[in-house]
Amino acid sequence: MNAPVTLAVTLDRLSMRQRAEISAIDWQAMSENEGARLRALGIDEGVSVEKLHKGMFGFNDPIALKVGRMMIAVRKSHASAISVVIPA
Image 1 (tube, rainbow, N blue to C red):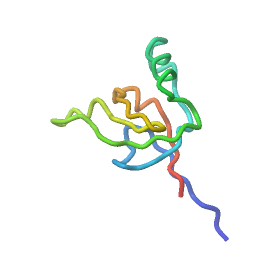
Image 2: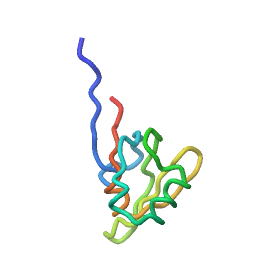
Image 3: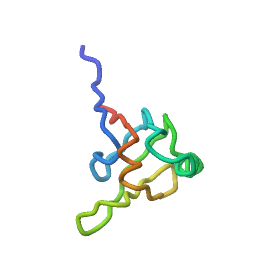
Image 4: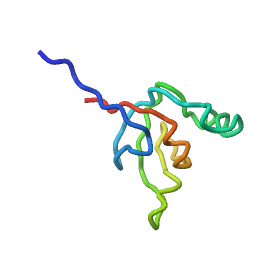
């Protein structure tokens, strides 16, 4: 039997309506205040997220995420610093 394969990507590359689990966050890629804001909104390793929407007109910024029962918006630059795994 083969073990289930998980796919690892950054949050900005996650497909729309795709659910994933945060596996790592590069806190150094953002300011201390930005990191504190994301933590206060529930963004941390092990948290399940779902990409809901992205900005219009080709900018793709901000990105709307479902975290628990909340919908939050994060900048694309922050989403690119968040690694997620997609369960098989």
